[in-house]
Image (tube, rainbow, N blue to C red; front, side, top):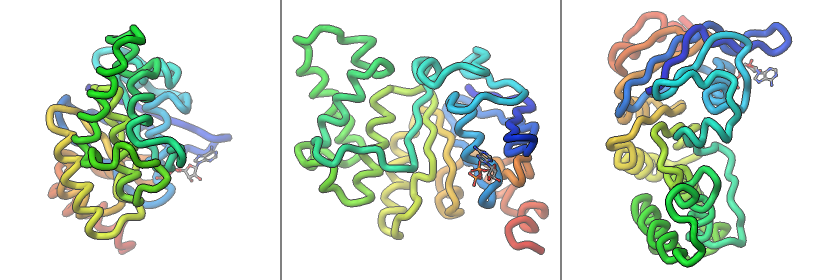
Length: 243
Ligand code: ADP
């Protein structure tokens, strides 16, 4: 589904991502981990077209997407949920989802073009809110949601694009234990039948969700494999514990 080859991004000669080879199989959940500054965000930005690689290639679903614009990549089926909350406080929860459905990269744009079919947008939006556990908050202002609920709404907005590949940037960042466990269950649910790549610092989250893991350090791949393989990899233990 996703493959990078020797993917490299330099900022004024500094290699934030260096010769990264990544392969994500269709229908699997893949975690990107690594200490701060390892290059995880830069890699996400390369995969979504927000940054252009210095060298190397990115293939998605059988196509070379290297150097394509974010809108084009989104249109091909890559959706990203942002770490930074990007919601409108005084717009309702369900309106957010309808707007995402009606966006140029959303489902509505492709399938329902007539204004008379707004009811179907509403139904689809409500179904998505049900999927992320927010159906009972549909009419509330987004600004009134608790932090964990805002993150769930962001997930619904990404799902509104019906992506082939879902990228989640730190889905549990800033959450307490209860929200973390709720998010793990939610991501498990929405990842069924989808391909997911996520960044997270919480190893409990990584161990619970990931089929495969890539560990980055200083822009390079330090280790790759199943969670148990990388967890016991000496280089990973050394990198994390500084031994
Ligand atoms: P992570 O997400 O793993 O914490 P980042 O991808 O944010 O790591 O950063 C990797 C490295 O690249 C860091 O040293 C960071 O300072 C540097 N970096 C990221 N973006 C830029 C940029 N736009 N200009 C210069 N350096 C950058």
